[in-house]
Length: 113
Length: 110
Image 1 (cartoon, rainbow over the protein chains, first blue to last red):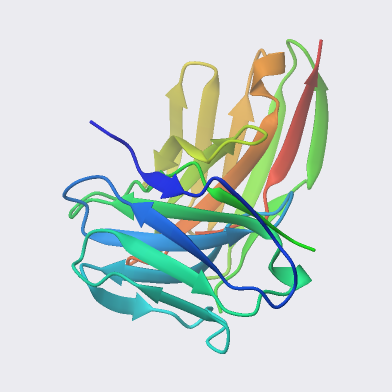
Image 2: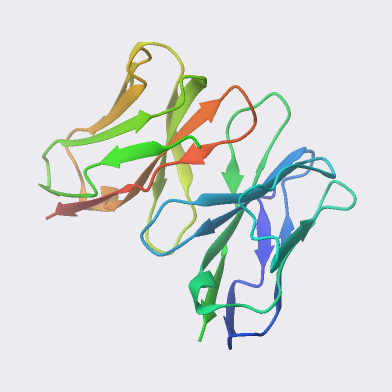
């Protein structure tokens, strides 16, 4: 069974540039999470979906971050006008209906100069 | 907002020693806890979960849970250098939202 895939694996931006991250969850998993993990800290939830619906985006900086999952499968997280404080690893995870365990993708390591 | 506190922030143990990590949630609606391990440059991988009061053992790893105090602990006996990693505690309330702690960085010295 294929795991969660993410791309790109690395991104380096100047402040003010935009970037998009893509996530392909495990097939059949209805719940998808996006986390931001600063270096040497725990993952912090940004947003999560059940199928195509946003369930919680209360921690997503809505002025610059957006996330979609239009068909309830793949998802895209976008940062408009990146800031140095956005430097972190962005992790995508998915979970199957009726199961508690989340499976994480390899992450995208973002550096904003 | 629910918080998950982990202690200590970092821990150094000798090879063969015992490592003990702690985690407490502020949310009384927590149904269960997960422990994840994250090696440097890798994504978190689930180690163990615990739902009921008491103790659960899998190999060298033992997890305790006290639901009344919302406290869980992870104990690693006969620690190995390969156990060196960031250990994350995650609290799962009766929703789909999971809250992670800030982690404990474990270093096992050969």
